[in-house]
Image 1: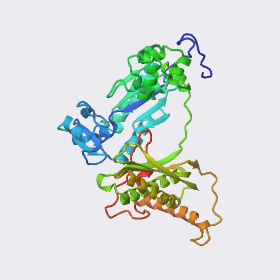
Image 2: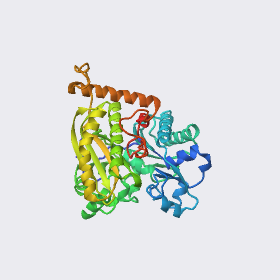
Image 3: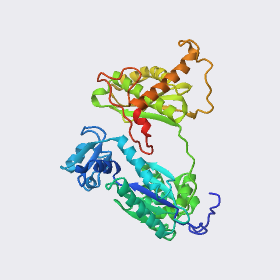
Image 4: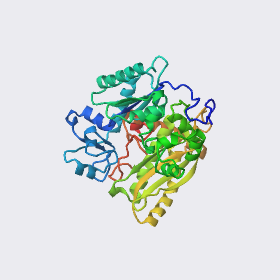
Length: 438
C-alpha cells in the first residue's frame, strides 16, 4: 500500500481530493508537421518522414493527411506508397526537429512552467492552485495552442489532456486528435476510462494483457472494480497498486530514475554489412558515445558491443570491462578486443550484420576531478597515456563543436566504406544540439 492512501473494501471510499493538477501536450504528427512548416509546398498533402531514401525502410512520422490513408509510424515506405499514390516522402532532419522542440518549449513556458519533457513531442506541466479550475485550465490550454501556432508555426498543432495526474492527462491527450482538448475531472473517474482498451495504458503490452486475462481482468472496468491489493496481485507486483490509484485520479509522486547507459546503434545499408564497414561503423558509434559521456560529465566502467544479423531477430552481444574512464582512446582500445568475437559470430550466422551498436554502461558522475600527477611524463609512458588521451579527446570535442561533425575524427572515415552515422531522436530521449556535432 502507499503511505497516506488507505485501502478500503469499497474501491472509491476514502480517496483524497483529486483536483486538476496536470496539463499534457502532445504535438500532432510532429516530424511531418515540421516538414510542412518549413516546406510550404507540402502543406495539406499526405507526407511521411523516412530515415533514408529507400522503399525498404519505414515511416518514422506521417502527416495528418497521410494518416487518413491508413499510414502511420512504422508503415513500410513501399506499403505507404501503395496506400496513397500521391504520397510525398521526405528525409528526416533530426537537428531541425530538436530546434523546433526548443522553440516550442520556450513558447509553452511563456504561459506555464514545463515540469517534464517526456519526449520530443510531449511535455507535461503541473498546474498551480490558481490554474487548476476547469475554466482556467481550458483557457490556459487555448493560449498555449494559439501561442505555438503564432510564434513557432501554423502547422504545429497539438492535442492537450488535463487531469488530476500525469498518466490520466496523457490518456486524455490521446482521445481527440488532431488539435483536441479533453479534460478528466474527479467526478468523471473512473467511469470515463471504461471505453478505453487495456493496451491504451502505458505499461500494458501484449504480455501483461495476457497475464491480466489469466487473472480474470479483460478490460479496464474489471481492473478498476477490484480493490487496490487485488489489482496489484493481477498485475503481479506493487506497480498494480500504483496503477489502480493513478487510474482513479490520485496524484502519486514520480518514481526516481537514473541514466545508467549511454550508447548508439545503427542499421547498416545492404551494401555495408560486411566485417570491415561494420567495424568502422562501430568505432564511429563508440566515438559518439564517448563524446556524449564527456559532455554529460560521466565516466563508464563497461563497454557493450551488440549486433543483429540478417537471419536472426535476436540481439547478439558481448562486453569488456573499462577502467573508470571517459577517454575515447581507452574505449576504442577495448572495442578492438571485441571485434574478433563479432567476426566469429558472423561466421556462425553466415549472413551480414544488419545492425551494430555500442553502449557505455555502469556510468557514474565525474565529481571532484583532480589534475593528473602523470601528465608530464613521456607520452608513451602507460601512466601518462590515459591523461593525454583524455585531453586529446576533449580537444577533438571542441574542434567538432566549432567546425562541425567529423572536422576531426579518429581512424579512417572516408573512402565510401562507412554509412553516415548521424544523431537521431530516440523514443524517450531528445538529443541535445551539441550531439549533432559529434
